[in-house]
Length: 289
Image 1 (cartoon, rainbow, N blue to C red):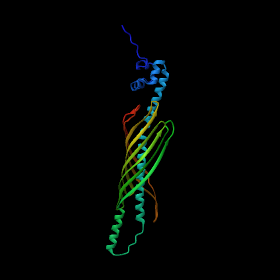
Image 2 (image 1 turned 90 degrees about the horizontal axis):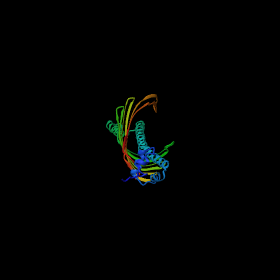
Image 3 (image 1 turned 180 degrees about the vertical axis):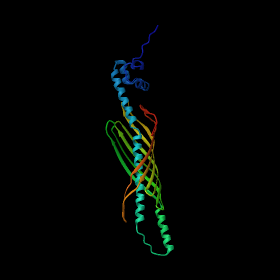
Image 4 (image 1 turned 30 degrees about the vertical axis):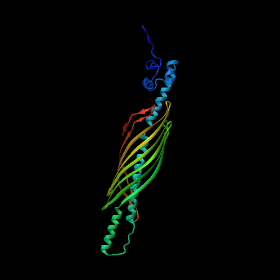
């Protein structure tokens, strides 16, 4: 009869002394010759192994909290603000144009009709625009992080004056980059933007809708207790903002109007975070609304 002794560094033996036995099982499957595993088995250093597993767990929590979604949300909000700024500029330019005095060299009815037609066409012509911007965000507390990004967007829109009503349609596309850092994790990413927007004003009512889409392709670097690693981290984000405004006219003169516009906002957001798979750590893809 032959008796065999259980390997003191095996999962069955070490799990008797370890709180997080599931993480222990994963570690042994990943690297059965891990130094802490071997020391716990040969020298009964179970406490040291338990502490080591706790640090690994914190590393995984850190990776989970600092996904590409932290970048995507800020970029999408910046894109939405770029669209709002563009719409305000387009409407302001048209209002200035409408208030500009017009002088005609001829009183002939045909000439006047042609001139007025040309003016109307100018007010409704297509407009191209370019915007460049940058931003930075800092997060304190237990999960400190810093984000900086830049972007260049090109847009094209058209404004229609339908009687006293106003209609704007536009599209935006752009590119940029971002740098995200949080303790032992850093992420450098390329960002591609796409936006669609529209506004309709009739009487005192104003309805606006913005749709922003961002694709982020990141190179992530993680320095954890298991060692350093690099891997791809990609995401796709979408943000839809619909605004409703009602205009209260407070004062009106020949040269300006003073008004109050309460705003209602309906927002829908989506982030599709791709899989992260490094040498030691991995995170499944997930969707967030």
